[in-house]
Length: 467
Image 1 (cartoon, rainbow, N blue to C red):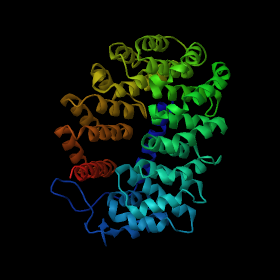
Image 2: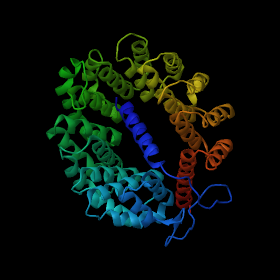
Image 3: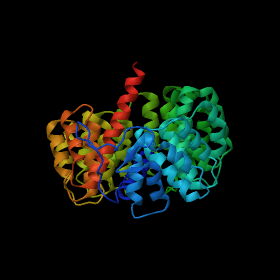
Image 4: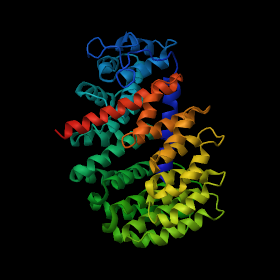
């Protein structure tokens, strides 16, 4: 299943950004009435942060000075005021400098900050000679949802480049899926051509895009069924799933048919065969698809719980299936809570699955709070984020606040992220994030500032839409 892969990639990107961007001195900008630090000046022209303009900060980035990591973060904190300087850097003759600019655009995109000029530079970056610039440009545009139907031919052509990184393809095909929800007539036929003519790698990503489109991709059902028939036999015999294997194509194709739903009932015979043999990864996708198409998830939840409780080495994929399907919580949640007791990969998948159940998984809160104290490098990050997805009750907020002071920075970052997610509906959580902007921990302080900035940008967009 793809969600664990994407979640893992997401965690790695978060952590890398956290480590790299936090080097350097602490913030010394002015303080707003609510206690948060802001740029020294608030006018677009000549705006500064810690006494330096965006151009000066980017010079520190491009010259790789000792302020390098802190300079990258400073540009993100400056937001709109830094866009012009970063746009200029996208035209630099040095590919490394262009890559730095595109990377900062990616982080700004996470907050939701862009303008017409920056989107234009990013679209030009999709054709850059440097693969890393292209990767960052595609990801930034996808995060900003800045693609239009007019971009479909360019995207299709670009994604056929066999040298592109998988992260680039995830973002590009994901963008096609989102565009297909709005204009299926422009996107689905193009994806069908790639599905029929492309490599296994192409078929895998195309199936993902068609799944994102969902019922509006019904035109592709016959082609998806034929693809599944073609790869079913080698997939069922697979013992190790490489990124571009038949098993991977089978899993993603089955999931796409499930997301299309009841219209894909003609796929049921081949899906029934697929769920009976092969690795858990593939069988779980077949169970998912049948449950979605028939609207009867309970027998499939029961089947995957049996797999989770067995001793098969890849049973952790059954835990992820339960989160993906997110059905029958009376059965699934207790089974996932039991899996939290394992010291294995199944525990990680169970934590992420419980997060998908949201409020239906409140019974897991005590066990998850205990796991915040586990001596593990990355696990508490997932635990904290799961808690933030499940409950905003006072005792949960208090536990997250207490662990903001922990020694493990994964724990600190995860708790901050969880509190930021709870902040819109929890006054205590928002106060905790605001308090973190005054923390003696410079890393925590600056990340908290960005959380609040992201929240404000989102709030402003909602306000503008409602006018």
